[in-house]
Image (cartoon, rainbow, N blue to C red; front, side, top):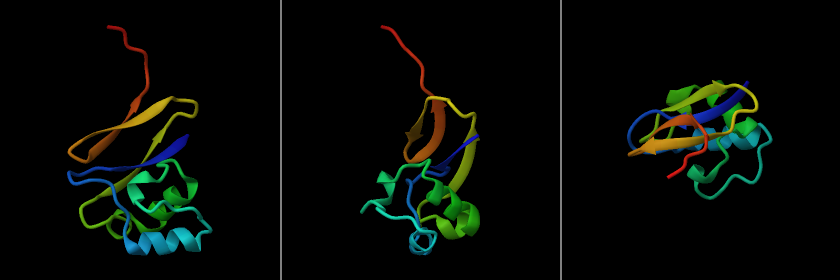
Length: 94
Protein backbone atom coordinates (compact mmCIF):
# COMPACT_ATOMS: atom_id res chain seq x y z
CA UNK A 1 0.00 0.00 0.00
CA UNK A 2 1.09 3.56 -0.70
CA UNK A 3 0.63 6.05 2.13
CA UNK A 4 -0.23 9.69 1.36
CA UNK A 5 -0.71 12.65 3.72
CA UNK A 6 -3.71 14.89 3.05
CA UNK A 7 -5.50 17.75 4.79
CA UNK A 8 -9.06 16.87 5.80
CA UNK A 9 -10.42 20.28 6.78
CA UNK A 10 -11.00 23.59 5.10
CA UNK A 11 -8.00 25.89 5.29
CA UNK A 12 -5.15 24.13 3.60
CA UNK A 13 -2.28 21.72 4.06
CA UNK A 14 0.43 22.68 6.51
CA UNK A 15 2.73 21.05 9.03
CA UNK A 16 3.53 22.34 12.50
CA UNK A 17 6.89 23.44 13.86
CA UNK A 18 6.96 20.22 15.90
CA UNK A 19 6.44 18.23 12.69
CA UNK A 20 9.28 20.09 10.97
CA UNK A 21 11.59 19.30 13.90
CA UNK A 22 10.54 15.64 13.88
CA UNK A 23 11.01 15.51 10.10
CA UNK A 24 14.66 16.52 10.49
CA UNK A 25 15.07 14.24 13.51
CA UNK A 26 13.91 11.30 11.39
CA UNK A 27 16.58 12.12 8.82
CA UNK A 28 14.44 13.96 6.31
CA UNK A 29 16.26 16.54 4.26
CA UNK A 30 15.40 19.04 1.55
CA UNK A 31 12.18 20.10 3.21
CA UNK A 32 10.69 22.75 0.89
CA UNK A 33 10.35 26.32 2.12
CA UNK A 34 6.57 25.94 1.94
CA UNK A 35 5.21 22.76 3.50
CA UNK A 36 2.50 22.60 0.84
CA UNK A 37 5.26 21.82 -1.70
CA UNK A 38 6.39 18.63 0.05
CA UNK A 39 5.73 15.34 -1.72
CA UNK A 40 2.73 13.92 0.08
CA UNK A 41 3.96 10.35 -0.26
CA UNK A 42 7.33 11.27 1.27
CA UNK A 43 8.03 8.36 3.66
CA UNK A 44 9.50 10.69 6.27
CA UNK A 45 6.43 12.95 6.19
CA UNK A 46 4.15 9.92 6.57
CA UNK A 47 6.25 8.69 9.48
CA UNK A 48 6.08 12.11 11.18
CA UNK A 49 2.28 12.32 10.94
CA UNK A 50 1.88 8.75 12.17
CA UNK A 51 4.31 9.34 15.07
CA UNK A 52 2.97 12.71 16.25
CA UNK A 53 -0.67 12.25 15.37
CA UNK A 54 -2.83 14.69 13.47
CA UNK A 55 -3.30 17.20 16.28
CA UNK A 56 0.44 17.77 16.84
CA UNK A 57 1.65 17.35 13.23
CA UNK A 58 -0.91 19.71 11.68
CA UNK A 59 -0.40 23.43 11.24
CA UNK A 60 -2.94 25.84 12.75
CA UNK A 61 -5.48 25.61 9.91
CA UNK A 62 -4.92 21.97 8.93
CA UNK A 63 -5.96 18.50 10.06
CA UNK A 64 -3.60 15.96 8.52
CA UNK A 65 -4.46 12.36 7.84
CA UNK A 66 -2.54 9.45 6.33
CA UNK A 67 -4.54 7.55 3.73
CA UNK A 68 -3.56 4.29 2.06
CA UNK A 69 -4.14 3.41 -1.56
CA UNK A 70 -3.11 0.33 -3.54
CA UNK A 71 0.47 0.31 -4.85
CA UNK A 72 0.74 1.18 -8.51
CA UNK A 73 -2.30 3.47 -8.50
CA UNK A 74 -1.79 6.69 -10.46
CA UNK A 75 -3.11 9.28 -8.06
CA UNK A 76 -3.43 12.99 -7.47
CA UNK A 77 -4.70 15.18 -4.67
CA UNK A 78 -7.87 17.12 -5.34
CA UNK A 79 -9.11 19.85 -3.02
CA UNK A 80 -11.95 22.22 -2.38
CA UNK A 81 -11.00 25.27 -0.28
CA UNK A 82 -8.09 23.33 1.18
CA UNK A 83 -10.03 20.19 2.12
CA UNK A 84 -8.35 17.37 0.20
CA UNK A 85 -8.94 13.85 -1.00
CA UNK A 86 -6.89 11.42 -3.07
CA UNK A 87 -8.31 10.56 -6.47
CA UNK A 88 -7.25 8.04 -9.06
CA UNK A 89 -5.87 9.56 -12.24
CA UNK A 90 -7.75 8.44 -15.33
CA UNK A 91 -8.27 9.54 -18.91
CA UNK A 92 -10.90 12.00 -20.00
CA UNK A 93 -11.96 13.01 -23.49
CA UNK A 94 -13.91 16.05 -24.62
